[in-house]
Length: 471
Image (cartoon, rainbow, N blue to C red; front, side, top):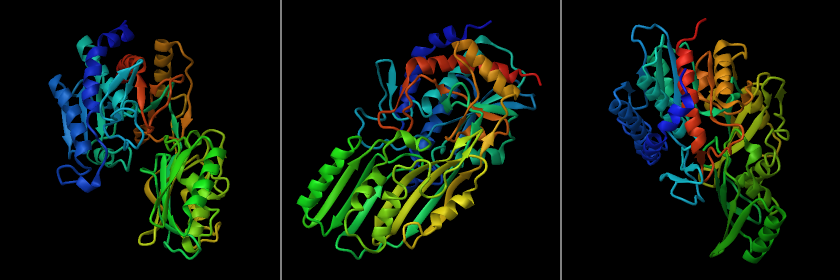
């Protein structure tokens, strides 16, 4: 019997040193810097090469596929089946308001603070160290096991899509990119883009409006500039609004005859919009009181009345709940307006079985705000995914989790989307524990050191048992 937690604790210092180097790579997708050699920009490529170089250093078999995806392999070369662990090296943009440099790991009070510490560099590296422990212990494996690193999980999954185009599919596996005890069900994921002309015509003119960095982040900051409004009136009104909504902050400034607003909400993961404060919809809700005209008026109403403070989409007519997968969630992720480029609102829906993307799009296309606009499905759509709780993969992982932690083990469904759904018998498994703070996609993202080390031990046993699973 292997004492997996003791073995993981022995690896902690080396793990944290490697993690600090890994977190220092700003692996945010940047299409403006994309090249043939780095299709998603230099950051994701550098992070992928870094992980593969660690494996080369430690003597593992590796493969880099087009600098968008790569894998590390252990186990018998002649086994027909293989088990996969699917992680990702890319991270979300840091956003504003960090207390420390987001790409310099700070370890304090038992936390690793940096962009990617929790999502997904910390857990992905814990899975890699599980590979090292298995190799060092010379444990037998009946199946090959691959730890596969994608470079674009936070966008459209370019890398992992490429992997499944050129490599055989795994028999089953998991993604270390969510939470415990296990995620055996994931809601569907679809984006709907609402667009319109950028016209004005009222006493007050909306010159520009901007909020949001990614579809799967609740915007933490929103900014707008208007003309035709006195600074004193704007300052007084905004102060009153902020006082009535203490969960947000903001300021007003004057440049010539233009008044600018900045509103600070709470940036969180887009699959949990109810836990954040959407700066974009708040600012639209505030600005609606003024006499805007043209498309600007409809744009603000669509956001401020029909989309604000409504994470289930009730007011837009898309609220829906399934007994197994739960309720639909709606995030307003990216918001833009100016007269030259028009209006753009990106919605991210996590939906259960029983409702379709076409229905959702149709509801957003309806004339709810007396606003001529269009609604189209965009981005990387995903259908709901579910692995039965009785599946041996689910049962094995739940048993390991309970045995190593003593905590209750049960199946569950989330709104988040992980690489686990790419496998017919794929699930998500850790590394966030039920009692730990969830900071994915947030400012000052962190992971608890003890959680990452505990996960290393859990993943070690999980890999061995899945590789030797009898069916």
